[in-house]
Image (cartoon, rainbow, N blue to C red; front, top):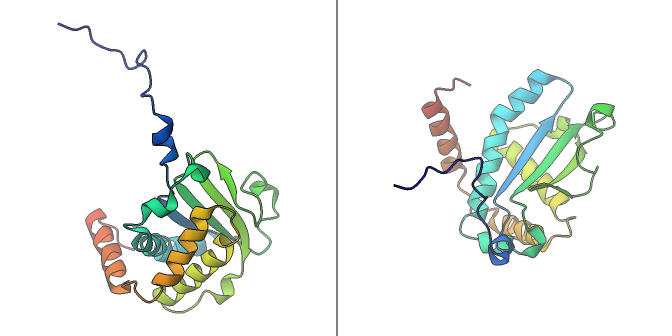
Length: 180
């Protein structure tokens, strides 16, 4: 009978250089930062998942386009939209570089000031504004994978089925028993 292996003495699995070179951008997220926490929570409830599902629908089946040595170890893309005046507060001094894409650990992120007064309309209209905002800032990235993602989002604009996205979101809320 073999001796039990302790989880504290086992070595971590080794990866070949090829496995790491095949890392890819896997998920794009958008975050909201407002002075009014209730508004921030409401925006996250309404738009965060819809935006994530939208970009996921664009990326599905195209992950090879978002892989390569430039994104070695990076799987997340985060765009944080700060309400005007918030980004300059000391509390956020440790975040990503303002207006520039920065790689930290396993993510690539950018912090920007955003005018929330223009974010009006239906959930679909608001998401279109967010997609336009993401394209605006993602196209500034030097990563070829981000440029490919921007091109794919632009070419897929009329092919995304919002009904399916909203249904997927509603199903997720129902499964989790969420009332909002």
